[in-house]
Image (cartoon, rainbow, N blue to C red; front, side, top):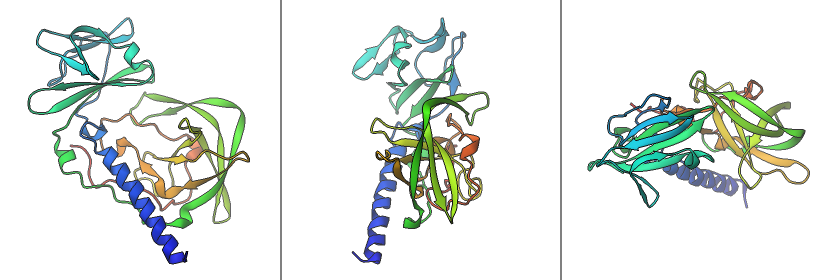
Length: 274
């Protein structure tokens, strides 16, 4: 295959990835459909348009649904007072509702030591007119060989968030080393998927200039038995906080702030949720 044909195929594969990424991002009840962000405490909380009264009871979330109000959890209809602790023990839950005009979902999840309530609606103007996410042209030069160096023992890492006072906790099995322009750089890698892939949070010299300032994220394929893998910076993608204030995105650890300009991957969004 000629170099031109390879570049064309590379660009087509990147476009297919980016199109799928954008489609997932704009799911009718996805994160860009969020209409607010609340953190539960001992006092009952009522959110306009969202069924129920929400609060923590003995540190665990529950919702009290008066007569005539319901939520759905999968195929199950919830009524009365419902404890949600077990439902969010291993992650969040989306509880559905409708007001006759739109479908909605109440997302309940732990964020650090706090419980978040984030309602969503599928009739938001931002979703209806989402302008898409600009990106740098796909460039094979930004597919960089890397080597994974495992720690003697995986480390528990705490990073900050775009919301002051909030923390995110990850497992870091090791670091990725790679070279750009003859200089070696290192990125702390977090545990990714069940396939052994790794997740990286990063900033670079484009952050806050042409790319979102807080962080971008990358998925890195599982290293082979010798620790070899590749970092495709063309797939550096925005986190939800690039699009909405109703996100709780993590910030990269200090060592993942690269001094070079990674002119690859997704750029600043054209607009934010309003």
